Length: 104
Image (tube, rainbow, N blue to C red; front, side, top):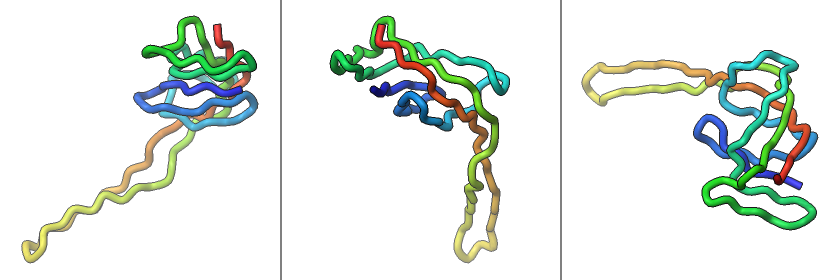
């Protein structure tokens, strides 16, 4: 049983019991979050593909933690011009443990 959900403009594969890292949500640790934007849902009955989303399908999970991802270095330069700029970036994320997938 799995579902493909959309959160923060990205798509994630959600399975019960698994933890996924999604772009930062405004929810406290321990809160329950529900994702209504389900693109594909696979259950015992079969696969439901949405156009664009599966009607009535939801994915429920619990917020486990908030954090920052690995550092990405952004380095710009122009040869022979003495131009160098170095900048780092760490994307914030929310870890969500998937509890239930309801295909509607």
